[in-house]
Length: 90
Image 1: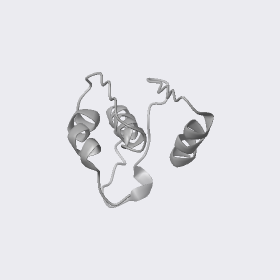
Image 2: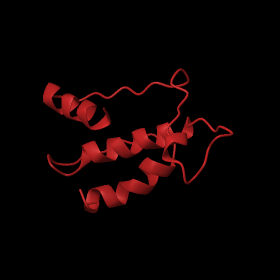
Image 3: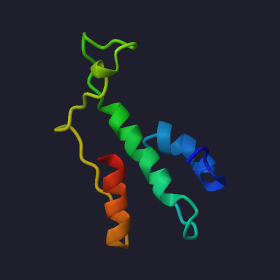
């Protein structure tokens, strides 16, 4: 995906930078899954561990999370959609 579509663009600010609850109703193929991904990235950003070794030029020093501090539950109407989301995050 190179850019957000119209639905995703309208929801991106609240999904990625806010802790507000979201109820998004849109047709199939409108990008609801990607908006859900933005909310997951928001949560991951909130629980990123800050370490002394954090170095903006060193990619190995990034990506540490306090995995015991939060849970993300993704619910979808089809098993295939859940498997796609898991594959994207793996």
